[in-house]
Image (cartoon, rainbow, N blue to C red; front, side, top):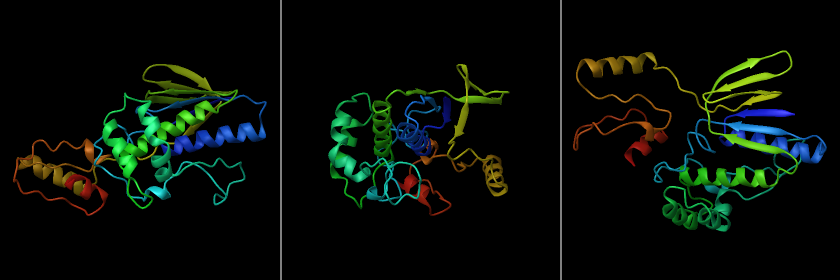
Amino acid sequence: MHITLIGAGPRGLLILERLLSWQQNRFPKRQLTIVLTDPYPIGGRVWKIDQDPNLIMNTAASQITLFTDQTVTDVGPFLTGPDLSTWALTTASGYLDAHPEFNNRAILLRQAAALGPNNYASRALYGVYQHWFFDMLVARAGNNSITFKQQTVVSLAKNAANFTITTDQESWHTDQVVMALGNLKNSLTRDQKALDDYAHAHDLFYLAPRFTPEEGDLSTIEPQAPVIIRGLGLSFFDFNE
């Protein structure tokens, strides 16, 4: 069976793990060919390894995991493994050493060594955890085939017997499709559009909410210029950082 997973963030990786665990424990003779696709590297847009390492998560490291255990009400087999804080202290160093191509590797190594169970990891470090998790799944895939394509899906068409996936680079047929798209880009709300129009009319700078704060260009703001940040959520602290 050929399966395409659209989205390589945490949800896409969790689905990949569940498919492999089900196949290996319930249907070992049935081979899976799985294609995972995302315009960004493994981890997706939010958890890019090359982002500012000062941007942190909003959940304690010991509460973050991509593994399952008896607390999960799922009829499938469990795959146990380290949460983010345990992984950081036991596995991160060796994995980062094996990947010199990762940006900010020295900073990430220091972050991993200092991460406690109640600390908040950087989003980049969680991105490394997801890369490691994906590599682990590939290594234990057995007779299954797993391929990651860093491509943007532009079309999904249902045929009589299957689906046709078209990306910005190629097309292929697949038996099943799972979409784990994460947060999607939104149009400006009425209030945001009004603020944007006012800023343009009065030669001011307005930055509408972005998918991630690091994608907002603040370079036009002059030093010591008065700034209003609207909202006190996680993005408020990101911009202050």
